[in-house]
Image (cartoon, rainbow, N blue to C red):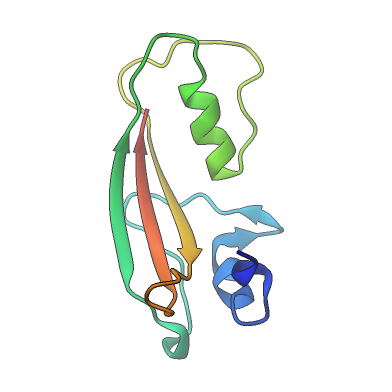
Length: 104
């Protein structure tokens, strides 16, 4: 569970942080890693749907490391956020980079 903060996982964490905050990536951007640390990217698209005011936008903001909007406002249409999450699954033993497309 603590792999991301270990010396082996720290370069992966540093690739998604900017000034100790999670970097926001566009749809076509991705973190840059040195060639020695290149890992496969696993892409998921997550569509969040539900009643108005239940916290879907706040959840996406929290996962992305950005502050949640202080006042409730209805999201018009679809708001897409791309989030990268490095992890080392126990089964494979090799790090992967999860690319999450969150559609709110």
